[in-house]
Each structure stands twice: as C-alpha cells, then as structure tokens.
Length: 491
Image (cartoon, rainbow, N blue to C red):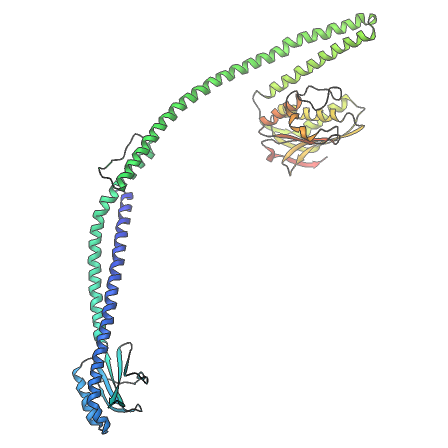
C-alpha cells in the first residue's frame, strides 16, 4: 500500500485507539475509585460496630476500675485479622487497657472527639484509626480506639488494577482490528482519489476520472465533486488551448502587419530624406539666385518676401531632420556599452560655445559620469537637452548650465537658469510639436524633447521636468543601469 494510504489508515487507527483507550481508562478509574470508597466505608462501619461492642462490654470494667477485665474484652479482637491494635482510655486520656498484634509497636496519635461527637476516624498511609466514646447512663466514662490495617483495600486496588489492565489490552486489540477494517472501507476511496490526483498532476491529463462508488455518503459525494471539477477543468483547458492557438495566430498576423508598417516607415523616411529635400533645395537655390540676380530691382518688401520663403524652407529642412531623428531613435538595434556622459556633455558644450563665442555661459560638468547604454542614442538625448538649455538661456546676459547626477533622486539632470516654464504645462513638453513658447521668442520644431523621451524609454528609464517662469528648468532622467554610475571629483 502506498505511503499516503498507510498514513491515512494509521491516523484513522490511532484516533480510534486513542479514543477507546481514553474512554476505558476513565471508566476503569471511575470504577476503581468507587470501589475504594465503598471498601473504606465498609471498613469504617465494621470498626464502628466492633468499637460499640467493646465499649459496651468494657463499661463495667471502667466503672469498677478493673483493667484486667477490660484487657480480656479487647483480647476478643484477635479474631479480626485486620485489627492491629486497640485500647480503652479513661476520660482524662490515660490508657486503661490495651491490645496489640504481636510485633506491633505503636505511638498513639488519636484524633480528638468533639463535645458532641460520638465517634471519629482518620485514614493514614497504611491504616485507619477509629475512636468511639464509652457512655454509661448517658455519661461519658472513657473511650475506645481500634486501629485497623488497609491490606484489604490495597489488595482490592491491585486486583482491580490488574483487571483494568487486561480489559484495556483486550479492548485495544479489538479496537485495532476494528479500526483496520473500518480504515480500509473509509480511507480506501480517499486513497484512490489521492492517487488519481497524483496522476493528473504528473501527466496533466484532465481526462482521467476517479472511481465512483454507488453510495451517497460524504466520501462518494467528494469523489463525484472531484470528477465534476476535472470535467470543468478539461473543458476550460480545451478552450484555453483553442484561445491560445487563436492568440498565436493573431500575434503572427500583428507581427506581419508591424513588419510591413516598419517597412513602410522606412520607405517614408527614405522618401522624406530624399524626395522632400530635393524640392526644398530647389526652393533655396532659386530664391538665392533670384536675390543675387534680381535683388537690386526689388523693393524692400519684395526682398522681405523672398527672405520669408528662404526662412520657411530652412525651418522645413530642420523639421525634416528632427522627424528623421525621432524615427531613428524609435527603431534599430541598441548596442550596450560604457558611455562617458561627462565627455559627451563637454563635447556638446564646446561645440555650442564655438558657434557663439560672445555669450557668457558657465558649464558645470562632473569629471567622469559613466552609464550603460547606446552611445549614439545617448548623445542624441544629451545634445537635445543641452541645446534646449543653451537656447532658453539666450535672453540672459549670463547663464549657467549644469549636468550631473542626483543621488537622492537616483537620476541624471541638466539644469539651466533660463526662461523656464509653467510647471502646470510640464506634461506637454514631451509631446511632439507641442511648444510652450512662441517661435518669435525661441525658434524650434517641438520634436527635440519627444526624441529625448523615446531615447530614455528605450533605455528602460523615465524623464520629467521641473521649472518655473524665468527661474530656469531642470530635466531629470533615469536609465536602466544607473546603479553603474560612477562619479569622480566634480569639476
């Protein structure tokens, strides 16, 4: 029989035997206690009767001060093997006559009689002592005591204890045989149910069913409920498999659609890069030639119109470049490597400063701030953020642009003290073509921060901004490997 069935049967047998043993022990204990109390009462009654006889026969001896006659009366107690000793006492407690079994020595410690008590007794470890008053014509003239052993009581206790032990052993054997038979009938279906559950768990075969009996007891109901549960699981499993197949087919379809969409996007990017740039270059070229060859014949308004055309064409070119960058950072394979963000920031700062050497801008960049990521994408993000800071501090005579790492927030940051923005509009910063300043204030396409956000998301991080109007702005961003950031000696 499997270990599981042995466990159930043994527990069932153990329960029956423990309950049976407890009931038998309680019953035998109650019987033995009752018998001991009955025997004690019987001994006390016998001693009381003997004391009455001895007292009645000794009244004359006490009256006429005849100890010998009293001793003869006590000697009649030899016929009672349980009596150890006996004695007659005077009213003042002196021994008048005494009887003792051969070899018995005794130190009397008699219980005292109360004023209204006729007799009293006390049990000790090996004997019982009874004291009774002796009266003549209603007046006390002395007392008699009888000391009896408890051999009968102890003998009966041993006898009944042996009987109780035999009954207990026989009952436990009977309970063992009975519980084994009942265990097979009651635990058998549960064992088979457990074996069926084990097969289903191992093989994941929900078509297996447990054997159902024809009865209607709790075990049979449990087996039927288990089979009903298996049927429901089998049906749902079939539905899940069917749904999984349909889902896989949908995933394959969506994947093909996504691949096709990516190809269309690549084709669109190629078209934007080549087909749209051609007309823009033509517009720029002809407007330049028009101004060069016929500029002298135009009035100031005409020249201004031509300049507007050229500016719009340049802005269109910038917008195309930004859209291409946004498309490029959203696709393509990433190459994880150690990227020195501090070096990238210094390179961008030098490039910005070289284009406008008249501006007084202080760049604060740590000595070495290293992260894990794609160097090309991270340079695009850093360039957009630092160019933003450069642009929005251009209205101030002096400016400060800082790049660093905030250990408390666990994020990198680029901070400036430029125009800033209203914090209520912070969420709009990272949406394409959303601008918080007009073109007249600060030029731009509104795509740069959206590009930065996509770069940060591709690195498993997030980006957010904090700022206030004319109090500067701070852009925070995290990467999936900020734990590898190393900061040495800030510049």
